[in-house]
Length: 221
Image (cartoon, rainbow, N blue to C red):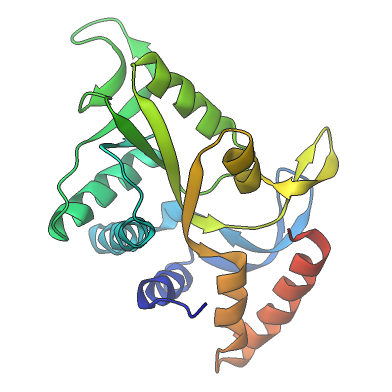
């Protein structure tokens, strides 16, 4: 499938803002990855708007039906807000909510903030590493009486997850899809990134393409 323009813009923005970096990075799994993605580097108004637009375009293209956006603390909070703004700009005005890490015992109290968490709720996060954040979000959404209906992320690494220090033949995203029964949509995947690098005219990006391809060959799903 051909890469969409919003996917290309997302990768270009990620590279320009050092949100996507190449080198040697030790992951929580202990693997040495040739690339690393940090959505926190979309750290200006313009950058966050561009990222929100990429999420919004992805969700509209996927045609997922949802009533509320939910951003898990902490990275998911600005992401959900940015996506809500960009969806409204594109003609789809939806409410959003998020959680506190610690319950508030004064004022309105509780752990949920923003719009009422009702109906079909779509979770917005940066990546899915082990599915822990998604499971926590599901529990909060269900406790509020709503139904989690999917997850939107920025980058799907498409690599084997680990359990007890050993590789397993499925990715964290596949776990969420098959075990937690939630559709997951990503702005871009590892395959998209590799296609982008392989088509680049920059010699350094072509060099990175080789190391990313080797990593995918070893750990990809």
